[in-house]
Picture 1 (spheres, helix red, strand yellow):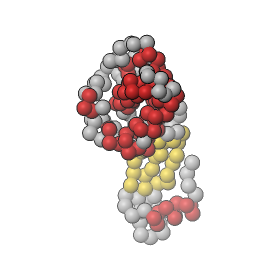
Picture 2 (tube, rainbow, N blue to C red; picture 1 turned 90 degrees about the vertical axis):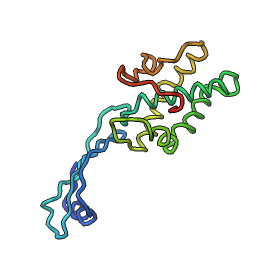
Picture 3 (cartoon, rainbow, N blue to C red; picture 1 turned 120 degrees about the horizontal axis):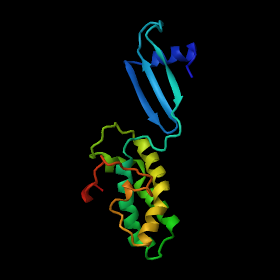
Length: 174
């Protein structure tokens, strides 16, 4: 969708520098390219365009890191609460979501981790919640059965959040 002339004029007056780029947020791909001018001539202005990004489950490119962080926290929650019947699995998942998937928490955790992608903090929160929905119950089930989870994020059960190229995070990075 492109903006009409009146919106374009208003946006041109608000812009103060050359801006262009691509942002991917949940369910939308934002493409924009704009320049400003002090006069009312909009010859240098390219309107903002919004495109449906399709059915992408995650958008940050940090799925493997998020999966490993969630797996670590789910294991801790299971050992402390769920495994001792102090919390139901659903309550344990809600606890992990509240503690780990907050924007500030995710931003702190992935800030120093290497990535080839720029990180949009609200997208980190969204990706965390989506990955938690996929793997949360599977991790609790595997822990209840005493299975080894060392390669869980690379497995079919985790929807292969990690690829062969992704490295395992150290305990101090989790």
